Length: 257
Image 1 (cartoon, rainbow, N blue to C red):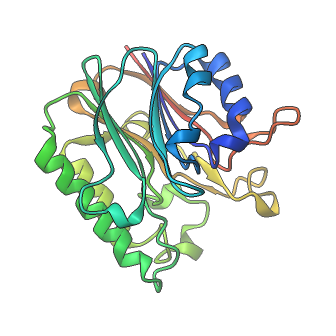
Image 2 (image 1 turned 30 degrees about the horizontal axis):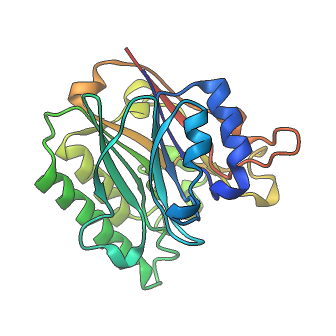
């Protein structure tokens, strides 16, 4: 089984690019973030024609998350309880024998901005959601854009950025709490010492200079973590394809036995 997560930075602008990726990579389940469109404009028919069931929780011009699956999707949650003011940032579903959640964590802007403590509160609500609605013994995937570098290895310049947004002790501790609840960062499980990024700024040639951040994750509970074959950042789909412009995030792909 192939499972992927991808912040696509605008589905309307990148639908043809996404369809090319689906044909080439053939994932079984995908979590998308940052759709930037309302549910009424979600291209469910196009995904159905490509062989996918879909479920979306969209928002006009901002945010938005969605799930694609080759098998039927039973949506169990749209939106993070108690965090409705932060927009459409979570969708959970039951897909065969797997609970699947994709999230788009708030950015936080800067540590001085009012959105920073709200980001931390959003993370706290996410942990509360799992503690109240799910069991760590079950087979669960949590994926998405977490807008945090969990460790120094996950940023191209820890010395300069330490203590700034995405690099604070408070943000990193929130990720650690999710891991203590029962999730495993499956990329780090397989590659504990490898520096790989999933996001690069469009500006300044950051992608080619290897100036990126690893902020897109696939987390799995122990029921699935033991079945991991490989996890890779799909760097090739951070590149322009003919006239099709890429997102500033690359997909992250997990293959299970």
